[in-house]
Image 1 (cartoon, helix red, strand yellow):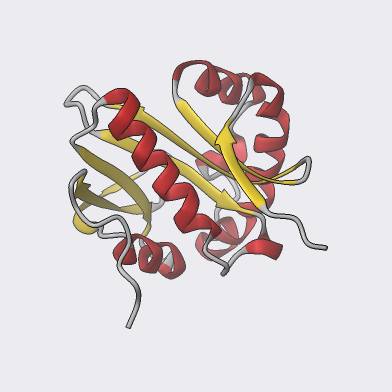
Image 2 (cartoon, helix red, strand yellow):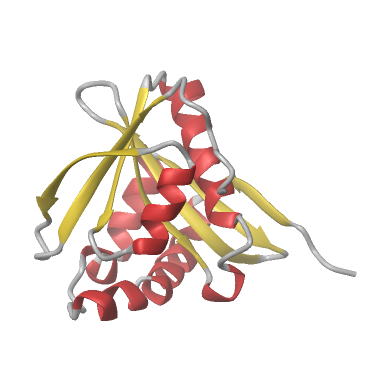
Length: 167
């Protein structure tokens, strides 16, 4: 009998598991850019705890194990900022990233009144870019992150379709 993956709000007790999962998941991004000092790999446990306390943070659980996570906050313009999306490598490719993205969007719209969503990903991160395009995001620019990676900025209106099936 298989278990279902359940998505729920993160608690303070999840901080360490989220940080460990993030470290595991972002190794491939670090390798892709030849930069092992990217922000997700140098984040501290205290800063993850602070995000859980102030932002919307969701986790995906398979039994007791945290196998995915995403974070959402509101910026000065009232836009929902989504980041830190990660799914355990053994569960990637099964729609869990899209489910976590939808959870962040729903939470930001319902609980924080976001009217649009913003996120970013590295310019070489084709899998991430595919996911975000399927979810209705469009590129609106790029910027250099503090860790030296060129980031593609993407946005969509909160009223845009949540997910568009790939052809």
